[in-house]
Image 1 (cartoon, rainbow, N blue to C red):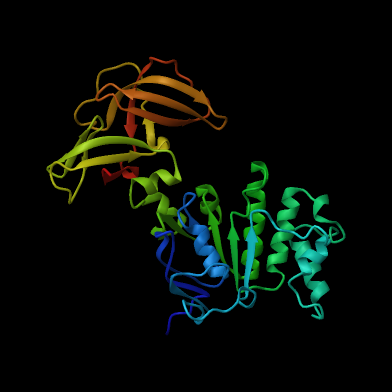
Image 2: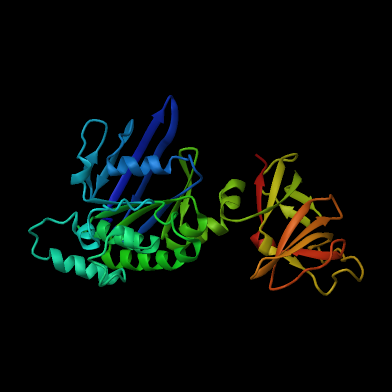
Length: 360
């Protein structure tokens, strides 16, 4: 049985400005009904990639296909309005002189028999029934975002491109609106490319994440896989705060205050970074501040001194300095835990959640 043709296929896209490649040989596919997130820091090339797919910018090389049919290369180009691609941006771009219903209906043919029914259906599904006669200035930011989503989906686009669509919203509203948006996109079966610089947003919405850096896709996969198997130190640090222990490889091992870490395949003398997320640094409360040093069989405990502790609401953040080597480490502890500065404690690691990478 042949493999299904992807809804969107991007092949070797390249774009340069003033001799600098901002998009460098980018390729990926998105099947129908999947939400793919192009994630990366500002300036990594993700919005330029989206604009080339939309047709508002031209690539220097590469091809773009929809359902296996070429829509753009460096010679042939279908105009943006004929690509069956919906667009949704962070400023919503609603027409201020049109009502909510007129905004939603804007992309529909005027004589379409189901025009009014489609508008009413979408307004109901974005929880704005009864808002059709209002105007954009009468709506909250969250309501405007819902209208923009309904307008983008009204013509039933095969692909929806979303460029930082939630960044203008109050932080307290974002999660609820993201969830409602995701549910509607799944109902419509639209292939979605979401561009964002927020890892939390990508983890919450995406079926697949494309992590972009310096114009290239450096890692791709399901959110769980990118978080738990980062390709390098920068990828790990992009998804969360990290602690870093430095070491040197000797005999495929690296010595740390927490014992030896495996460094297979790395030659002796290689400098490495051992990455530990704060939630995987554990406090040994049975030995905290008292008792004998751990025996060699323990192998995972290290003595440290509290430097500062802060309560953040759901958890406490405790900063330590290791007695051996003097490295600074941060641990997150559920609920309230505020030991005084100078308190000695024993720390342990979740070794299965640590990563060893050659130092940059």
